[in-house]
Length: 430
Ligand code: GDP
Ligand code: IMO
Ligand code: MG
Image (cartoon, rainbow, N blue to C red):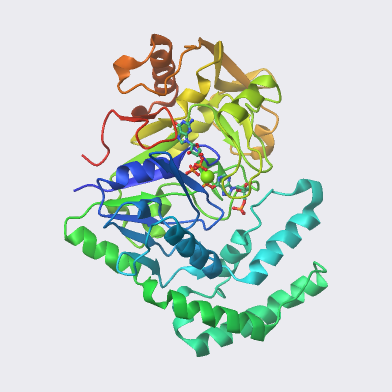
C-alpha cells in the first residue's frame, strides 16, 4: 500500500488534473487538501474534456472515493454548480462516494466582494487574483471567525456566526472599500437552501481517510496551484492564500505526515504564470506567443492569457526542496515540438554574481536575470510516442538535462492532453 501526493512545481496549470485522473486508476480515494475554486484542472479522455475546480479530478473514474479535505475553502454555490455541471456531462456525483469535510471553511458572498474590492484598491500593484474570495476566506479561518461546512447543519450556530461576520465585513466594505454591503436575511436564506442540497455530502474526511488506510487502501492527494504560489514558499505577496506544498497534504486532509509516501511534482516542460509577480524566464516575444498558442495557455478558471517562458530550473529545484519531491511528471513536452533551439534557465545572475538557489526575498528575484543553456530542438511531433525508445535523441537529452538540473527523476511523461498520451516510466503507486 502506498499513498501519492501530487503538487504543482511552478506557478500552477502544470497539468495536475490530467495526472490525477491517470493515477486515480491505482488509488481507492482522491482528496483535495487546499485551495478552492480558484483551481482549474482539465482532463481529456478520448477527446472529451472535463474542467474541474473544486471536486477532485478522480471523479470521472467509477467507484473511487472523492473527498474535499478540511484545508479547502468551499464556495457552496460553486460546489453545487459543479455537481450539476458534472451530471450534464454524464458523471453522477453520488453522496456515498463524494464527501466534503465538515471542517472545511466556507467562502461567503462577502469574501468575493472583499477580494474584488481589495484588488481594485491596489490598482497597478494588484495580485491578479481569480476574484473567487479565496484570500478573505482563509483570513477568516486564521482569525477564528470562519463559518465551516458543519455550521450548515446547525442553523442557530450558522446564524450567530453570520451575524457576527457581517457586522465586521459590512463595516469594512462600506467604510474602507466604499463597496456594496450584504443583507443578513438574503445570505441566510440562500445559504440554508444550499445547506439542504449539500447536507448528504458533509462528513469527517480525516476519519474516512484513517479508515481507508486501516483497510489497506491507497490515497491520492490532489494539490492545486503550484509551489511558487505557496503563501510562504512562493513569490510572496504574489501568491495564493494557502500552502500549496506537499506537507500541507497531511494538514489539509486530516492525516499524519507518515501517510505521505511518494511526492510527485507535476512540471511543465516550459514555464507559465497567471496574474502578477516576478517570472524571470518570461518571454515577451514571438517564442512566448508560440508557447501560448501551441500550448493553449489560457486560464481554465478565469480565461486570462497565461504568461509564458522558458523552463526555469531554479524554480523546480526550489520545488524539489520545499516539497521533498520523489519524482516528476513532465508535461506538455509536445508544445516544444517545432522549436529549433530550446533554452533552459540553469541559474540567475544579479550584480555579476551567479545565484543557483531561489532568493528568499522576492524583490531580489524581481531583479534577477536568467542564465540560459541552449539545447537543440527535435523538430518532430511527440504526440504519438508511446515509449522512451520512440523519442528523438534531442527530446531524451532535454529530459535528462532537466533531471540533472533539478536532481529529480522523471517518472511520467506527457506528450498531449489526452489520458492516452502519457508514458508511465515508473508507477508512483507500485
Ligand atoms: P492543472 O491546473 O495543473 O490541472 O492544469 P490545467 O488543466 O489548468 O492546464 C493544463 C492544460 O494543458 C490543460 O488544458 C490540459 O488539457 C493540457 N495538457 C496537459 N498535459 C498536456 C500535454 O502533455 N500536452 C499538451 N499539449 N497539453 C497538455
Ligand atoms: P491550478 O490548480 C494558476 C493565481 C492567481 C493569482 C494568485 C492569487 O489550476 O493550477 P487567488 O485567487 O488564489 O487569491 O489568486 O494565484 N492562481 C492560479 N494560477 N493556476 C491556479 O490553479 C491558480 N489559482 C490561483 O492567478 O496570481
Ligand atoms: Mg489549472
